[in-house]
Amino acid sequence: MTRRFPDGFLWGAGTASYQVEGAASEDGRSESVWDRFCRIPGRVLNGDTGDVACDHYHRWRDDIRIMQDLGLSAYRFSVAWPRVVPQGRGPVNEAGLDFYDRLVDGLLEAGIEPFVTLFHWDLPQCLEDEGGWRVRGTAHAFAEYAAAVESRLGDRVRHWLTLNEPWVVAHLGHRTGQHAPGLVNSGTELDVVHHQLLGHGMAAQALRAGHAGSEIGIALNLEPKVARSDHPLDLDAAALEEGLMNRWFLDPLAGLGYPDDLLAASGWPASVVAGGDLDVIAEPLDAMGLNYYRTEVVGHPGLRDCDRPSPLRDPPPEITEMGWPVTPSGLGAMLRMLDGYEFEAIYITENGAAFPDTHRDGGMIQDEDRRSYLERHLAEAARAIGDGVPLRGYFAWTLMDNFEWALGYSRRFGLVHVDHATQQRTPKASASWYRDVIARNGL
Ligand code: IFM
Image (cartoon, rainbow, N blue to C red; front, side):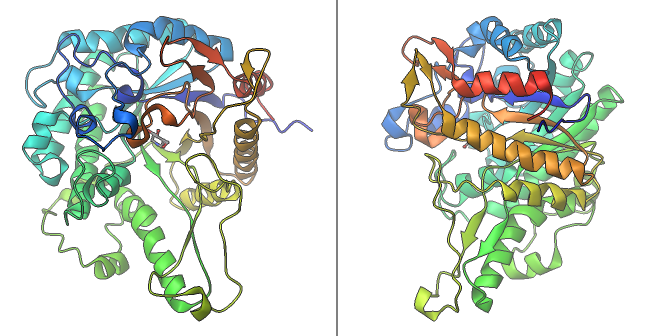
């Protein structure tokens, strides 16, 4: 049975500047926090860097042809702030903007709708040196940069996403130190969230002032958290983690402010919140972007399994190469949760999986595990649409194998295989399958 998606449903794939562009020091691009982080020994697997990445900066025309061949109706990419405003604020580098100008034109000529993310983690290092997202000034600089991009591309770009996964920048960048800028237990995680959300609101205002009628959104990584057992401590731990990952972002964006229960539980002094900030953060959103990968089982760290009442909940045994459990039902749960906030439109802005891709047949990677992952998640998406969730599009993560942050090039999420030595692109079996899904507009 074919499960059809609504007419006009957008079928896309996504990438991010630092993960694919390369050309790290061309045409006036300045250093980003990830350029710096990659150079600290031991921070990125195998010492990999994004210096060359997929060389998308030079090969974008070929990459558009690949997108056309897949039948994509939308492409999500991010703009590199250090390319456009190399000093973080102030003078705009027109040569940097030229790249995105050509890319947008090329996409539109190919009938592919550009979805532009303004910040996917490559903060200019010079702003990091002034305190990065730990300080308020970065939010103002972000709004200036957003206005600069809008003034060049806003006549053609109708879909904007301000930030990608602000939780990751705050948590992995300022608490666990696994991501740039690599700070461990800095105590600034929630300040970093606040300044990003403030920057989001200011940027949304700037985008709206440029061209009324464009669709403005944000991409959040959201996850259900399931308690390891019904022990009250496990239930509380799961609720707290889920709250800090989901409601902490959604409530202020939806105009509800930071949740009182989480403010009390986190002990965050909120000293960086100035009068009026919450109104700026609540600048109306036209679309919510959901990046969904997994559901996590959470237990209270002080409990041993022998102290817990049965049944104990385990993550399902099927995992991706990231070690993430394959949990499609969580996608449906997150879509319904978002629907409760009454966002006008929802997009799945990322969903996908890394697998070793070792099985080849006739020169093609037979990535049945990835195909099955995508299919099961899309089936959940279809069910949610059937229940009335205003889901307007789906972006597979990712178009092609690329720089997977602290794991370098060791993890492959792509629909298209990239030989990182030769830059040769070869569509995988999952790409052919996705092309058929798109052609049928259904599963
Ligand atoms: O590759 C990343 C992407 O940049 C942000 N979301 C998660 C993906 C997989 O880890």
